[in-house]
Structures are given as C-alpha cells and as structure tokens.
Image 1 (cartoon, rainbow, N blue to C red):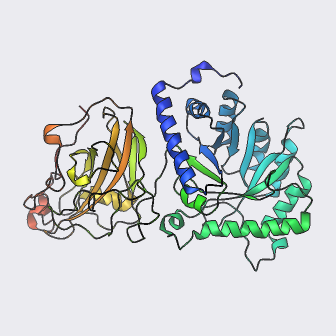
Image 2 (spheres, rainbow, N blue to C red):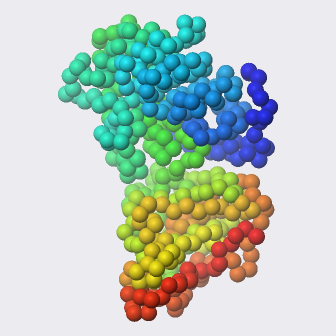
Length: 475
C-alpha cells in the first residue's frame, strides 16, 4: 500500500459510521445479486472528503466513482494508488488529457463520442500497464435530460448506428482503450414502479442492446480486444443509489451507489412476496379517517415485513422522505421516532412510545388561505428532517405523517414508517410529555384536527397548533 498523509485519517466515530453504511450496502448488493455473481460496487464519492474514501478503502473497498474531473485529480493525488477510480460524470474531450494523467484511473463509464475516445487514446501514457476500460453510455429511457447514445433494437441496422460505429472505432483505432461494456442511467420511475412480473424496461433495453452489439462485434471484429478480460462479455453498468437492487436483479455487473443511499418505498398494491424495503408494509394509499384508528401508528397492523430492511443513519444527519405524488396543500407534516424494544423487526409499532422530531404546520398567512407544510410536500414531493444529534444509538422506527385538512371537519391521516439503526449520538432519550402512543396521541375533539379551514374564523386566523406533543430538541 502506498504511503498516505496521516492527516487524512478519519475520526473513529466517522470510521464506524462509514463501516456500518458500507456493510449495509454490501449486504443489500449480495441479497439482490444471484448467488453465483459478484457484481462490482462502485462507491460514489463526489463531494465526500478524502478521509471518507480512505475509511472505506481500509475496509477493503477499492472501486470509487467521481463525477468531476478536478475533484478526481485532487483525490487521486492524495489517496492510495491501489484505488480503482471510475469516472462517471459527463465526459468532455478537452478533459481527456487530464483524466489520462491519473495512473490508477480504472474506467470511464460515460464515453459517447469518437472525439473523446481518440483524445483519451492519444493522451494515455505509453508506460501505462494496461488499457483503460471504457463503457459506452446509452440513453435507454429517451429522456432529454439524460446523456447517451440511442439503444439498439431487433429491427435496427446495427452497422449504421452511432453505438456500433463508436464501438468499432475503439476496437480498431484505440489500442490503449478496452471496450468493456455499456452504461445507462435509467428512469427512476421504471425502477420503483416495475413489479416482479413487469421488468424494468430501461434495464431490459440495455441488456438487449448489449446482446445486439456483442453479436455485431463478434461477427465483424471477432479478433478485437473487447469485453471483460476473463469472460469476453460486455459488462452492464446500470443502477444507482435509488435503484441498484432492481438493476442487480436485472443482471447488472456494476452498480454505482453513494453513501447517502436512497431506499425504495413499499409498494402497497404489489404482492408483498419478494418486496424488500426499510419501510414498514401497508396495503392502501387511502387515508385514515379516525383519530383513534388501530392502524394510526404505521398504517398497518404494526408488524414488520417478511424481508424487512433497516437503514443505518448517524445521529445528527438528515433523512428525506419522498412521495411519488401528493395533491393536498392544506395541513401539517410531522415526523416522529420510537425506540424499539430490542430488535425493530420483532417490535409492534402499536406498542411503542413515540416522540416528535420535526413539524411544519401553517407557515404564513391565514388558516384558510395560507401556506402549509403540505404545500411544500406537494411542491417538492419530499420532506427532510434531522435526527437529533444527541439521540442515543439503537434501533428506531421513524414515522412521517401527512394530515390533510382540505375537507371541512374531516381530517385525513397518511402515516408511513421505516426502520432505522441510529449510530453515534449522545446517549439521550426523551421522556415524560414528549412521549405518546399511536393510537392515543390524538383526539377527534382537538380543534387542530376537527377544523373547517373554509369557515369565517379561519379566514383571519394566523396561528395553528400542530397536533401532538412538542418537538423534542435533543435536550
């Protein structure tokens, strides 16, 4: 191992956080991949300090991905030469010389032009021990905001396509490059909405494109140097933090995952069989209409799923919930947590004591015509809360609640829960009036719940008390 600056060594606490996060991602990769396959996990390290990368490297992780050329150059100069760097950002031909100067640059995953390929081949030093691996980026979703060449289909004249012409150019004219495979950034909607029987069309399209291209290359350039060195297969890089498990199930050989991992939510109208999520299972998008409903805790019977996951989250970090759609702008958003009795997977959410860590009610204006927390959710389809930095480490449920007040005196609750393992922290837990039960925390007679936002008093009312206990600030 090459020598490194001792000042890059991360703190013991940060090392532990990264170790747990990396271990969790590795576990999810292993579960999603077939037992006979060992896909490459590229840890996306953009904006992360070199010390974080070093901590993961010391856990025997070698593959890291960067989006920006200068950031990659700076980090590569500080960190061990054993690291295998992957460039995963938009590739400009005028940056080829800079990238080519990095001795342990392992792969460029975003090649789309002969100009960039030629510039790389020309700039790579003759003393480089092995060719630079390159993947051709394919725009399988057809989205305008995605880079990449068009995919291939059964009726495509392969020889006339940009993809085959670029592949041929690399194989015949770029001896310092090795065409190793294809990469895509598929549509996230495809990954989250595709069921077991409805395969992700973007990932399937890349597999089909790879097969067509491999057949063409075998026929036209069988003696060329392309594909994986050991198998000759064109590798597939598809899947990022939000959809890498779906990509692995579709046959991806490489996934690109950041430490800030996005976990897919529960799909209530799909079969529970085979669903893996940190979110607790529930069966309907319909609202809860009673303040004392037995399902108030997590919109379910309180039990974990058969393949329940848990996300590792450092105390003091932010966690963002995302929705695929939301249509009501009037009402508050609240976030609760509950410490589990031992393992969260074996804990019933109805038996736990909950404390509030965040709320956004009436932000401005009047109750009848003002801006609400739900308005922000409708605009962004997300809500971010901070795990209290002083919270004791352990297993917790986190509960996001949307309370829609758009129908007069007819409150509608939409609670959803997920499992977390909180690391670090300051050893503190709330007590007393901060703790509530679900059901039990709310009453139908509460004026903040049994409310008509269209009545005359609401037209001038500028205050609103969010239902439930006060927010626990970690003290």
